[in-house]
Image (cartoon, rainbow, N blue to C red; front, side, top):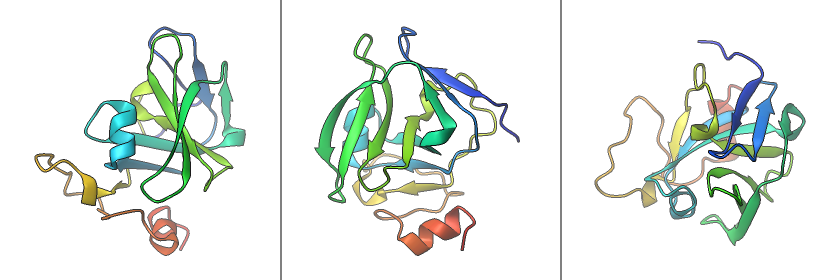
Length: 149
């Protein structure tokens, strides 16, 4: 299934809108505690793009924290309605992640793996068709997942 560009999204109240003009670099389902708290869900569906592929109308508010992996993470949200928008990390300054639920049309977007399953909730059922990683994939595992071995 292909993606119709631009891929548009935003918050519930419309104060923040964004467009993505290129294929995502990757789409993970993250089960870490930080992402669960930032989204209010059992996992965060994070779709990552290179910064130059993204146009955003208003920068979201954010709370900063150290991730479970020890990186500085910026979890973004709309300051008006509270919608979780996405994230960025000091480890990947050239990329920006968006929560998949913020996109208007999810056709063509498919996750490539579940990560941080070591911290998933015990009653959560994982998609058995997706590769699963106890923590963050290594660089080698990551490159294989995105087809850049």
